Image 1 (tube, rainbow, N blue to C red):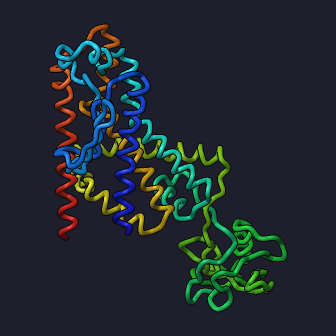
Image 2: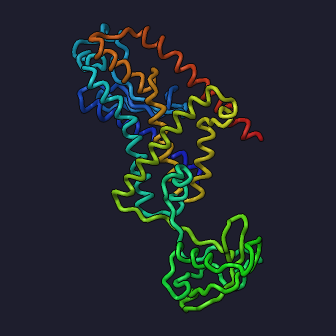
Image 3: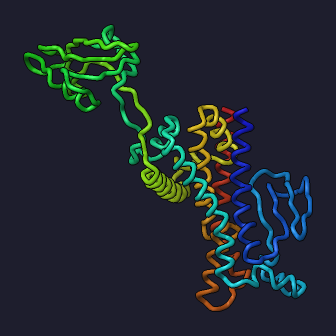
Length: 369
């Protein structure tokens, strides 16, 4: 089932990306010839009005074909059709249509990240915390998660206990740690030395209040007195504006990491060995979906953002290439030749293809052990 959901999620991202191009192209009056999920050869097609809707056999993306996206096509078109062609439109319309696809992906990433943070989903908060440790998505609670064997708390505290008071005062994570550390060894602080006095904890256990006494011991590694238990972590509560701000920070971090990772992959063989293709991405997606809804939403949001970033690289036939040449035309005041466009773009496309082939090779190696 997780494989099906993973593929469904990836297909949804592709459809929504192309739907962005399609919708805005229609809104500004361009003629859309085809809306295709996946690439040819075509398996299924149906025509509605002037647009053909199709499903291809190669599941590597999708596309929207707008009439006249090659400027050399214009001379062979009927004047009425040519009037609505892509290259008959002013640069600003072309830019808006092209940016609509990546724009949808960016919005999807923001909405999914925001929803995970605002809802307080623990799995999602953990995933986002791993994505960008600089954003505090988790918070510790005064509940006991685990007890270390052989430590002072072993046999005294139990997992699930909630510390409600320490030394007779209301407990927080910080005050509990401070109170435990305040009980010092009678002599020098050496590994495992026992505090002269116990720390008094009031805990809630199965609906009852219990007061416990535990003698802390010194940990040289932690450089403090400990009793040997871990606090339970919970998703940090975000307000709607707070979740929006945190989501934007997550997105900015992911974007910069993607860009630096791309350039490192071209120059560093170790980084290249970590590159994945759609095969590896699907495998990771399957494992993530199986881990829970929060993880799955973060994965889809992250993948949507990466699709937007890669699509905005300034090389044809990527969206960023179309935007770059529309801007160049606006600045020059005249059209750029198709030959010049593809000569410039060929270098970037070769580099991208190199990484795609490398990613497929890495995935095959991983899958075959």
